[in-house]
Image 1 (cartoon, rainbow, N blue to C red):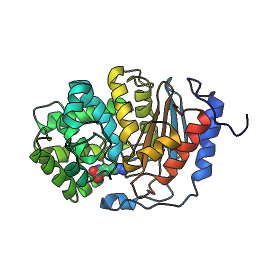
Image 2 (spheres, rainbow, N blue to C red):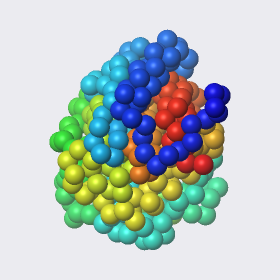
Image 3 (cartoon, rainbow, N blue to C red):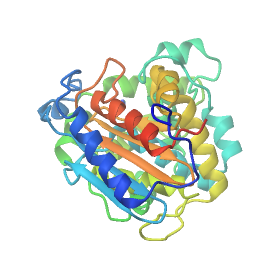
Image 4 (cartoon, protein in one colour):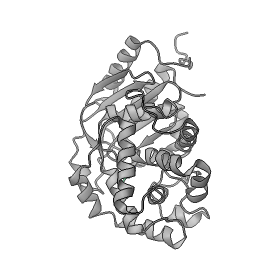
Length: 319
Ligand code: DON
């Protein structure tokens, strides 16, 4: 009936309907000018506020894109669930839970207070402290080996070899004293698992990998597909690991706005300060958005609106 939300059916609607809705979402929100560019990483302040791309991917490999879908941007925090997935695959979910945690902090992504207030310290792999600790657990005896594990694994999620944006990497390396401090603090609490300087550098490099919104959609759809990349058909991680990743995403993917996000979209998602958001509809596919104007928590404003609209119209809400 008109006015009622579309109820989840177990698959995406027919291709033509998805295409129409993706175009409509883009058109609805492209003139929304709320939010601010991230400027604490100088290279990110050079983004154009008008950039806006959307891509929906189905678990059978179909992609539906609108707007700036081929523009590259640094992945930033959207790397966190995928690195978590790869390390989870290597170490197992239980060990990673014991070492990094899975509970939301309710505080900003780079909060030092969250580390001080909570016995578990790192709290979860989606905030900076937990993400740097997760990166420190990447298999490998040297930073180069750890980097190869991360770079190769994220590239398998995307289905193509990703490359680092040198300008973003240098810019963040020169200004990431807060993350260095967080890593050192965690070391003091026994929650950092390799040298904190190396771990912060690896984390900074992983955040500087360039992706497009199409890449993010394929990466998200790999998590929706139980760990199999729907385009390359390669298994990237096992399905039981996938379930763990999605549970943490639902809890903490949008930081202190994670509750609002779940309330609006009914789906696990992850945002990043360059303006990307990936949202996973288990068993069906994913929604990826990119637009660099952010709300106060560091989440893309157009991305939040477009994802809420698409989740409802495509009938993806899990609840
Ligand atoms: O560590 C940082 O501050 C950035 N490399 C990533 C932060 C981020 O994307 C937070 N997301 N909204």
